[in-house]
Length: 237
Image (cartoon, rainbow, N blue to C red; front, side, top):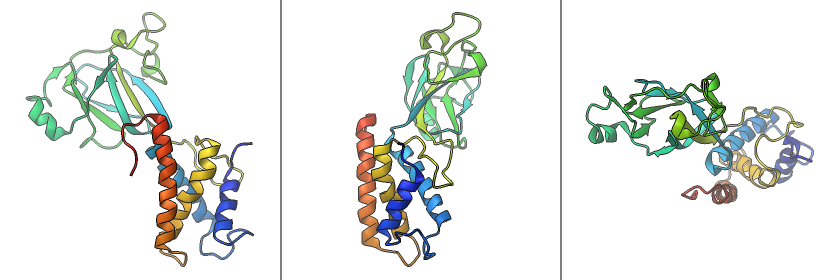
């Protein structure tokens, strides 16, 4: 049976010495839901366990492209199947003369200064890639294009692919809700510590710096296991 919010709630109540439920009012049920949602989001973002591929059309002279809301942190960017290194706009000013106005084969991507859920290509592409069915596709480097073969490899369709951390599309709001995305073993072990860290560091009667540090260390340890499994280049400190 999958882990539900009730399982996390029972653990939190036990650790807060409220076995009958959160009835003292120090932490309310709604606050618990809010803290749990924040913890789930934090785990998904920092562990790197849950990633998704998003491939979209490349348009000539279009330098900025939108990223769907269900993707959080960009892990890598690929153009025509080739990896693009990241850069800041300040670095681009030094690396490519007049990169804002010229078009060419993009050499870098950047995310600063263009708002959330967007990335820029520098310089802007000097070509239009093969037309992807629907304009974009999830979970594939080799998008289905139209007209043409059912599937073209990235070097053929020459479009833009982003690999990014996946964001939960739902939030928990009831004790019977399943925990989104996170496997049961991680959910049962990591999430209670993440919620308790936030409770013990809050401005309330349960504030306890040492308890918060302990719970935070346990939560981070679980994240580091996720980092190791996902093959992320750097562990969380």
